Length: 144
Image 1 (spheres, helix red, strand yellow):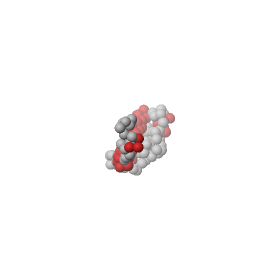
Image 2 (tube, rainbow, N blue to C red):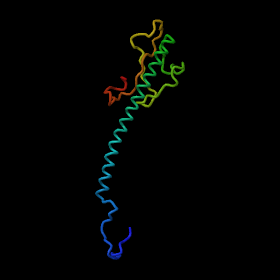
Image 3 (cartoon, rainbow, N blue to C red):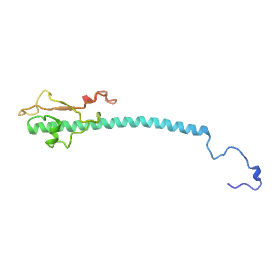
């Protein structure tokens, strides 16, 4: 910025720099950033839980479908989830997204058979091993 000719160099106005920010303005901006970050962290954590629940639903659907197909094809339920993998009904036993382990809880007594020719009941259902409760559905993951 050029100094006008009628003002001498020792007469340049000294005061707050009009191009800078005051401490109060900086504090207000920082407070707004903290508030927005707090809100976004909470939303992020909710979206992670929703994603884990979606993966759980999908894995349970695939495993239950594989158990049903295995039972109808072999006329006997699988003895373990590993039997589904070795028979080629699933690529690999998935990791439970809630416990982060391959610790699925299997059920062998479902009160019936899928086929009249079925001679061995075996596994008929699968659930998560987690006893945590879904914040969105209000029931334990082991009941999904």
